[in-house]
Image (tube, rainbow, N blue to C red; front, side):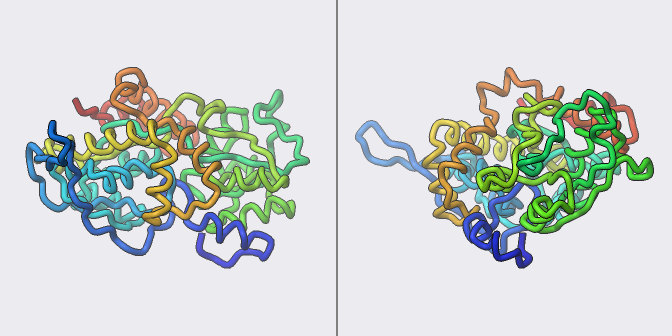
Length: 358
């Protein structure tokens, strides 16, 4: 969200800045390695943590300004990467750089949503190794809209104009799945819905308020900001509403090349973020302060940010055994096939893509 916005939204931009979704614009600067943490000895003095193995410096593309990427920020700041023998260097990289890096092994590990699925089918060699969190996208409508979240008749939702960040991107796919669930084709050639791209989410909301679009598909926290302004209401919150309820939208991806050649490195990276997720679940307010102080995401409405970070319900070591991550991969693979973004058999696709770690 970098373009000039209308004056009425300037305060919002200043407040939230880069506080956006999982795959948004990269931040400008890399983060140099954090020092290793220590544990307390029986004498009460800090004792350095000695990792079982030293993997050296590893670049992790994670600086995208998103709040829901918190586990990587916290793993870095709290020294969980260092505990696993990783000299982590957090970098900024766009979607294309991440997926190409995964394919050739230059990027060993990233977090991301199901937008990666079509790239995997097209030959980018990556694996989903674990789940991350529930949804961070909302569909919002004007406060006076009578659009239903679930239509009794498809005609209620036909011919809508829907704002997205990019045609083919994650918000587009979320809106498309919602339409298809309601009996409306999202395929552009059918002409039953029109998608309009807005690279700036604030301009997308302004278009909603002005009546240029009927629905805005936006990353957190823009939907919440729109609602708090009194100008909009939430139609679908993918963290809790059907057809997305109870399913992780975001996952951890590993380079198949690195996974095959150095599986211990991937395991160490995953161990670190799982530790961070558990820590965030137990300490959401402190986690937010770390994110603010580190300028990972510009957050001034701490209460809103806390609600969101708790709402994501990051997977922990405990929930890893109970949540059906493979089922989520299969679910979204099927949904993406339904809207034309995957071509092959969803079961075969899932079997190839999903490779959980021990």
